Length: 63
Image (tube, rainbow, N blue to C red; front, side):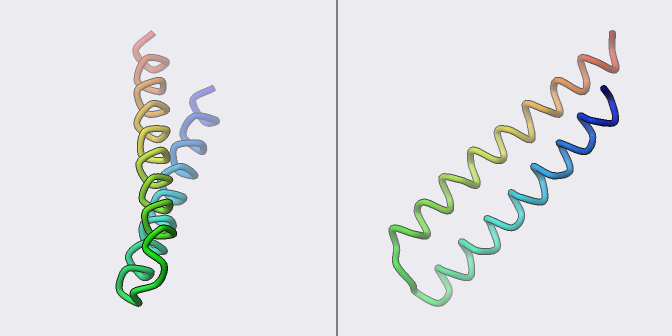
């Protein structure tokens, strides 16, 4: 369980980083603002997922 959660947390963090990079590059290139906005919404969702998984991991480790 701990290993699975750790892998999921790493995947969520990498996905967050990827979406963040894509959003920043899109803003720098001044592409479609709707796409940048959608990417930032995905970033927030992925950050939430990573934090929720991290909290779950802490609960598993505590118990």
